[in-house]
Length: 294
Image (tube, rainbow, N blue to C red; front, side, top):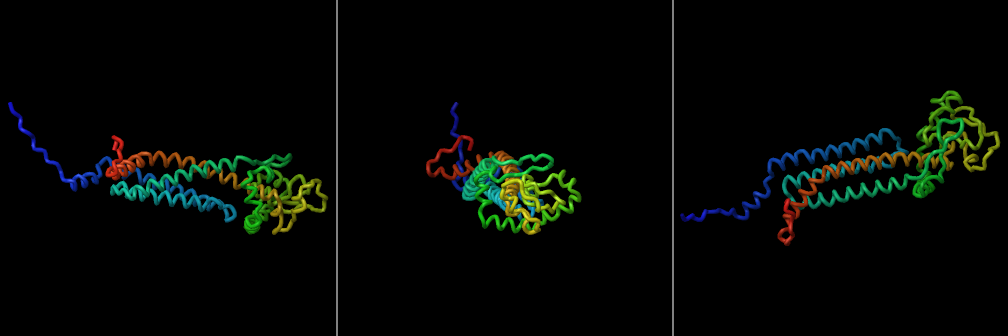
């Protein structure tokens, strides 16, 4: 029995190109779910930045703006990736891949540096007090360089004076006993009072008897004044309190970045594979061999 040759119709190149641009239902659902999820992550990052701004005054917002910018950038990248995957646009996907790699590397580098910079420094317990005292030399050289810079410190000092943190202590703690048992913040402990080694007796939470000769050679003892605009803002202990606050803030952001990095990598893993396939298929004219999964 003779079998005739089947008539096979080969679509023209234009039809093949059109078919390659068609988004399959499974791909459609994947795109519809994956990129909005990334946008939700971006909104979460922006929300974290807003939370930081509402819980800190202008003196302590060193990382608020970078976090907000990071959230906006992740949101923009997710939009570019969505459009690139939706339209199979290799140009958008190139922008998306490069921007994504830049963001992930930047997050990783900042996180590693943040953990290195914040590794040193901690408070010292003082007998009879419920709060810790801080010493500037305990902190990393990067913090020392930033805080010993005259321009930087004058700006921070001016802001701390306006914040009224020290002047509000007498309203919060009515008696010396309440003051001694209070859990002061690093800035309150370092900027609003002289170091305990000076030996000045506290009259109340915002006033010390300076008629006593200091029992310590610490230069902060002579720098402290009861004046609302002076206090211990020129003391190394104040700089140490700010360094401790910055350390805590940087650690929080570093941990947040680790979580963000893991989430972004997990969300973008398939997006990267798909984008690389589309880019690879676009480069076949240059004899680039694409993976079989593409």
